Figure 1 (cartoon, rainbow, N blue to C red):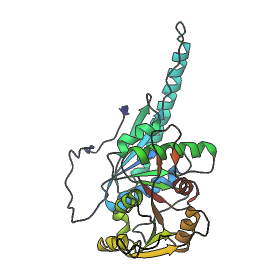
Figure 2 (figure 1 turned 120 degrees about the horizontal axis):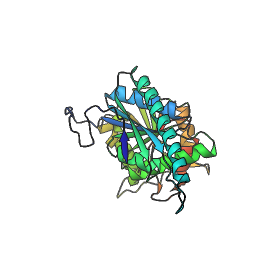
Figure 3 (figure 1 turned 90 degrees about the vertical axis):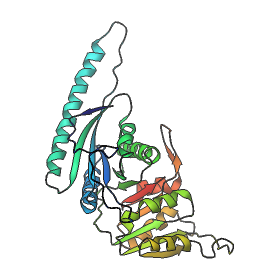
Figure 4 (figure 1 turned 45 degrees about the vertical axis):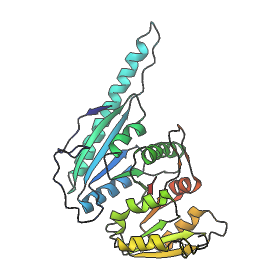
Length: 307
């Protein structure tokens, strides 16, 4: 990995050069990361990332990733390597031009930020993005745009960041918006560790919302020895964190769970959905659970995932 022409602000992954913030018993966003994927939704994702950084007074790191393919040469032929070198120079020049435009865009915002140009030679760009995501409280990512190429790119970044970073991931669809502070949000809840992780990771956003619907679809029957009312314990937990939570139980009636959740979020005029992210990591072509993949492809609202 090579960092090029990075405009730094005296911050690093270990917190060197930072002034400690008052914790005040709250989970706070202090570092936000967004990779530029080249997808049409990059602009919407960047707008959301800037809004989040401004609202939380957080540092924003933007990565402009250069996908440099390794040259293929024969034992007596240097021409392929020479030709590839010209391609690499062109890609580098384009990346630096993109980074310059991003810096000009950020000069108009009251946000502490930096733009890094990252060369991906030995590893694909999504893998290179993981190390930056690991040093952030939240990653923001452009969602799919309905084309096979864009869907493949979004899926690759989604897989690596969700399963490899250990951090929550906010996916912003094309033309997606997120006004802050939140007015309404929806949590897709089922009692497992992925959903529990997502709820915790979303606290810094949910606490400001006027109303948060905790939606359970096809909820199991209560068990007196455990919880007579499924969902009530996590709702009480959120309330103790200052979240204005409303427990909602719905039946799927054999409809896809993603459809039921999205329809409820739209009727509730929610601005964001929170769910756990399921799947298998470390696969070249990732395999996600049905709910996760359907939300990635179909949700018109930003979705916060945790794994």
